[in-house]
Image 1: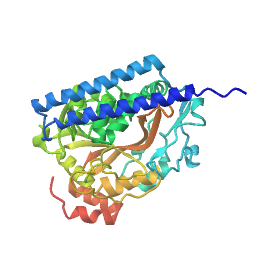
Image 2 (image 1 turned 90 degrees about the horizontal axis):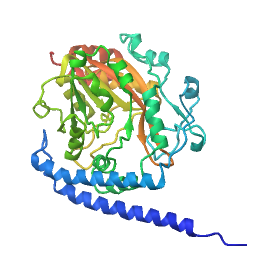
Image 3 (image 1 turned 90 degrees about the vertical axis):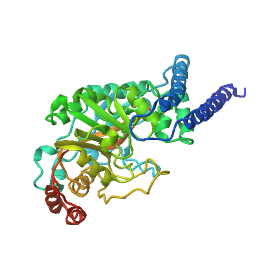
Image 4 (image 1 turned 180 degrees about the vertical axis):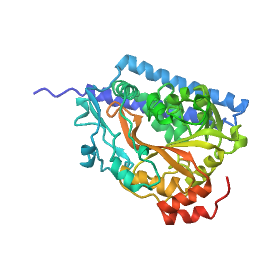
Length: 417
């Protein structure tokens, strides 16, 4: 009997080793380039920061070029897509897609039905409307709890990522960079020209933002906008979007994407260049910041009297400090609920009403991240809330009705609007 050839295994191992060596080399060079950046200063980065960042941008373009060559030589390496649909309420009640891996966030769920090679995906949009309504204060209108539906733009994004996942070399660079620098900066270098995240489509955002203050002439603030992936579908809805981030590489990436980005850790008018905004977006940031209640207080002060706050938080909610190595410890919140309905109700009753915000719309959506060829799309279960700013005195009354314990700390700081 002939012994099987070891060459295929050796080739795979050699390619994997070469990829790791390449990734570590890129990470070392990018880290050295990052050290040339001046210390972070609030506002628009200086010319010196721009020149230093040009080295990081060049590395990102190089990594993207290698990724494209990898695709040309080895193919897309994706999976088939035969069916993408919404999970039914009955399936959700039966725990469809539930994961038990303790290494994952509690909000993570399995989007694949059966083997990945079958190409069938199931996404969470619907929820138990009557149950959520029963958990909210009676003063909140019935039209708040209306889910959105899976649409063609979302289908197109998912299909594209499943059929053409991120090149392996780019993922290897990202993993190497995360060990050496701020992990969101790692994404800036590793995924140039490849938006990895998706939340809601343009039409879904237009549906949620209908009736916003000052319509298309409105000016919005996007807090912690990352690489701008989630901001792209919002642009047509506003006259201007000012975005904030914590590091110069992220700010420059946002400015390259057409946003008026500034470096800001806190939401201060002198750093942002404006004293008020019509809409403030805090998308998948509130559970990652140092102090969620301080951030909401700052957003409240920056909004016009009729302004809107739009927040996305994955549920079940958990907190993880995105910048754990800097500043003070993360302030904890008292979130309840281990499913979407109870978690969304706790967000309203224990976080937003006490902070001066009343919900106008609550929807559920998958917060997507594009991955590797084995699992090209992963999703977290996200709650997106559109809220209107209410006066502090009104917030105290609302929070008292929703939760007596939550109102105590808020009412002591009430001030006239």
